[in-house]
Amino acid sequence: MVHVLRIEHRYGSDVSAHSTNGKARKALDDFVKANWSDMFDDTYQPSKTTPMPRLRNDRIEDYFEKAQRIMGREEFHEIHECEVDAA
Image 1 (cartoon, rainbow, N blue to C red):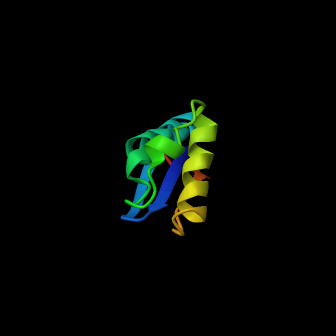
Image 2: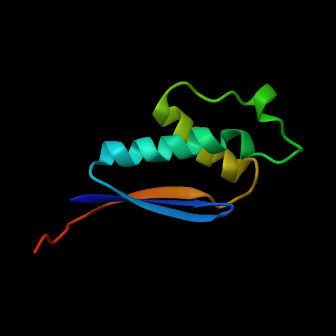
């Protein structure tokens, strides 16, 4: 099994493959943490009004919800579990 992570964001798409769903979720969380401060434009100051949630699932959900609701961007993520033929 391979877990394929696709992240659509304002700069394009990121696609990566992982051996477990947990590793795919970790890569997604790493993306969110690296891009949290860049999520907003100059009219919205996240450091003052939107602290990064401490828990991973909350952080991921918050990032994509705010990107859509506050910034009006169609950002999303998905993880697909795919069979791999080792022949």
